[in-house]
Length: 401
Image 1 (cartoon, rainbow, N blue to C red):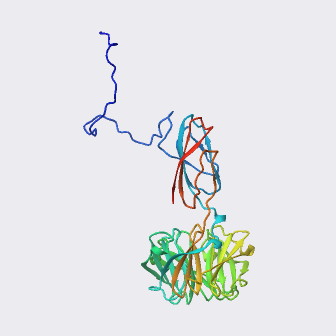
Image 2: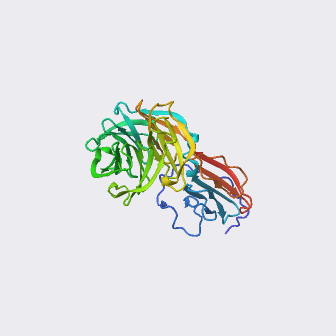
Image 3: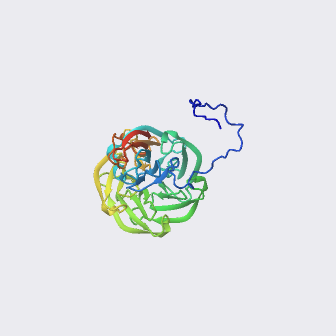
């Protein structure tokens, strides 16, 4: 064989042409690589959770966490000498920093329901805010509306759906639902709570009377509003005659036939002598009352969640009279960053914005300062190191609101 050592060594880069459509016999890879061993998995984000997630940078380079549910501290483990990785999360709500009336402002959003209802007394929402229900007191009819953007009343339109409850009620005052919308509750001003079944959740056209009711007139015979705790084992009724919130226990959640008076109440007459609407935050540590005399919403603290015997006035209120001079009901989105007030003079639902604070996120010492986030933001940080994690640089961030 000839000596090739004196031949010219090849140099340069070959540039391929074509799209490869004429190639055959090439294996097409499938799957996410989870069956491979001994190799890092750079393209399959690994899920992390909890308040102290440890990110194994030696095995993955993308870490995805859902919404934070507590103040969270992140750590990095098994960091290679040279590494680049990302951490993504949603800025979750700190319930202790939301539902704050002191931060409420009118959002310049409203919805006029007068084309259907002539005497509105209450507005309620589905869990995701894509359905809204307005109660017409004169006709005892619940009207249903669709919101193309959840909890944004400026996107509401009539769904051409309604339910007539006049067979049970004389003068309806308030409407509430269980979590999945398969049970609806309407109170009559005379002192009774009536229960209805919806075969399709949050669709009032599928409603039928459940032949279940509960008489609360022993506590107050002039009712204004009703609310439940999350699992339906506690019911709260606002009475106008005694200007008080009365609490009841349900041995079976959201079944009013299992109701008994809990011998607990709270007098709100020091704030307003004609209370008309009631709402709670999700853990029951904050209660809100609409005063029809003042057109103010008043905020109370409960030292034990959903126990009105532990309630006290916070001194915080919000004046909604610039929008309507006769406010009758209040509701919130799930996070306490949006508030909705029904005004009966205009038969209109008005929307307000409340500030919300995200849970805090603590990162290991890094070079670079993360930007401030707001509640609900999807945040992705990108980190690099060239010394095994002794020095970590934050080189990029993406914040999607």
